Image (cartoon, rainbow, N blue to C red; front, side, top):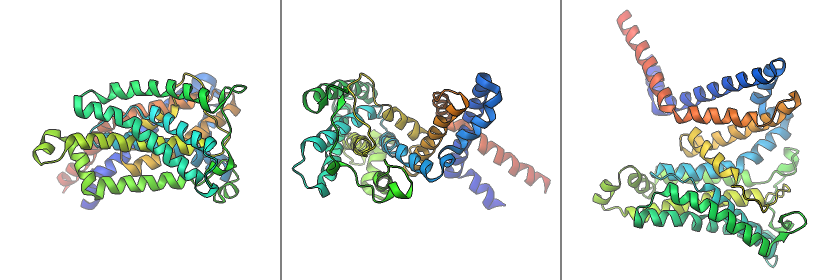
Length: 366
């Protein structure tokens, strides 16, 4: 019995249950919206949302993995920065610049062998995202400029710069989008398109999982990760301990930007028929990454499952159109889940109070 109470009061378990409570509240709120919109189909529509990717069998699961890949990467970007005491709200701009460089290399660098063309394109995306994340990092480290302000501005600079570069280099004027990426730059499918019966499936999900494991090891098992987290929690104490806080702030934003840039490359080199369009809209994957990071408590493993969950219910949200509901309802549900997830500390405290009360009652009963 004592082990059970210790388990419920542990940090990881309380975080898990707080996320489950946030999801439950979000789904209940979604049910209310569905009832107001069309009460006759509300419960079947909610079941469809919960089923998500399982509705269409292996094809649905493949679609979940495809949709989850970029938002896992942007979620990892935001979560990594947050773990080191920084708020990287510029994942959208880093994602966009990384995507452009990947697509540019894919279209223009056709002299590369097909076996390494896509790898070089992804490396270009990583470098572009890293450079875009480095700017707020330098301003934060050297001039103490708030990274939230600078990263927001870098989002808009990124989108307008990329639009200009697309028009000048890889533009298809008839469709107002980039030209098609040749097959040599498309990420290999590895037989996954046959396994899941989805044409846009590729090994990108494995690259994302590898990135999750790598970041988890860096943060949890290395001295470098410890220094990054120490600078985030207490810059003054880190300086006293001889840690170069300015260097670590810059490196943290560089790594965060690289992760988001890789997400852009993974999406637009997937061969799914998705193109970069010349429009004045920030990439939604960057803001979805913030949601994923919050829901995953900024833990790399949590971010992986949060990304899969968000993609799962998004697939279910697209299916509720069969019941004459708007697909945007799922965005409202996700927003409520994230809003509740942001108050996870309240849920944690509630769980601790309940377990403590049960423990006291049982001790008094003896």
